[in-house]
Length: 504
Image 1 (cartoon, rainbow, N blue to C red):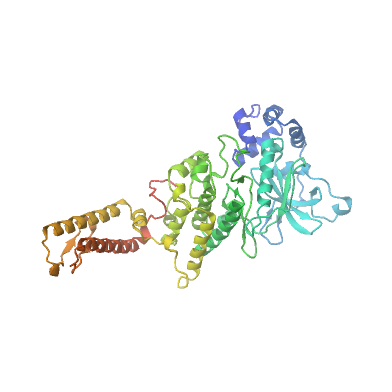
Image 2: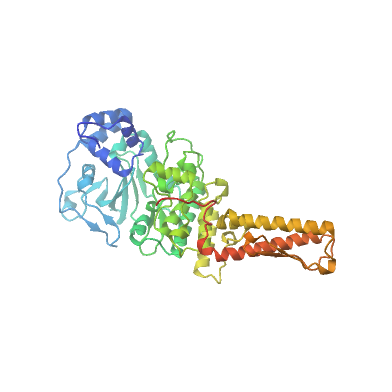
């Protein structure tokens, strides 16, 4: 922020309303407007909804409550769900809470309530709002209450987008999607009630453990793809699949997709802002980064990026600025996963390439197809002898050989084939080889590193040239397969072209 006597520019306030500011900048602007009358007035004009803005302004204008050492800190009973005290940067939440009934105030660990739900602490904060840990008094179960941030409560589009999260998630019933218990759209600050999942999210696990074992990466990917398949069948695209939006249930390791705040119906063209790019940059698809129309395959690209992060411990696309990340997503391929995690097998790179291909036509077609592939790959890793690797992941075809070994080897293969054709055609036309003595060995060019093509020894049929060529091509295929195995540790089969010179 600039000097205190100055104010934020119009464009900065517009980005805040559109929820396009990075988290740190958003918090900075929010802190400023809570005490700056001029910026509040400008934001009110931009928001365009006087009733809701006046209520938001009332919340932002209230004085903060002094810090209290008696507020709860620490973790839940499972030891993994970090709760923040309602102090410091979360002072603005306090005025939103109603006091507890006198009968409960002396014995409860809660610090207030929202409607009938006692609130015990803060789970986390996102771009749209804050998630509180509460208790359902009727069913006696822990809950998570997601409330819309005050600076967005006066923005009609933000309220609509917030409610769309509830509608999108509530319409999908699947073990890998966080369910919605209830939604209250008419409150001063709308809120959603969800189950409280102990165990944290995948981003926290990556930060804590680094790269995960391949079998765990595939297990997680399988569950996410099954959840996405359910969402896509219901006509919903998530649009923000990333490690922070996937929760891991403590004890059983079940993963659940959360935060449908950017979700959109497949056939819904409303509730969008022209030119606005929604999503987390590091995990966006190329078409999403360009602001183009998207379909369910965009979620598959994000799923591939998530699996990449699980296997390497870092996001696939990194740059100093969000714009730099977007450019890398649209114009380049990430570093092959094996260059970061040498234990990753070659076929895992092929799998990522099928999820993260920049061309929609070359990407997997559906989440169901991704789930089938991940299921087979997971079974193979767990028991290779009983479950063979899916043939579509084997680096065997000439096309994948070209991706793996690069243009030079492909050129060698083409040269060998062309030479074979010329030799067989010449021999046939001149009739220089007697049918009983066709045992010529055609030596390849020296650039082919000694690869040779053996011509058939007994070809008495008039179509001997065709069978001869077929044999030669089969031999070339075998030679390339062997070369692929030799270079397995150095292959670059992950994507459709190699990316070199990237500065990490």
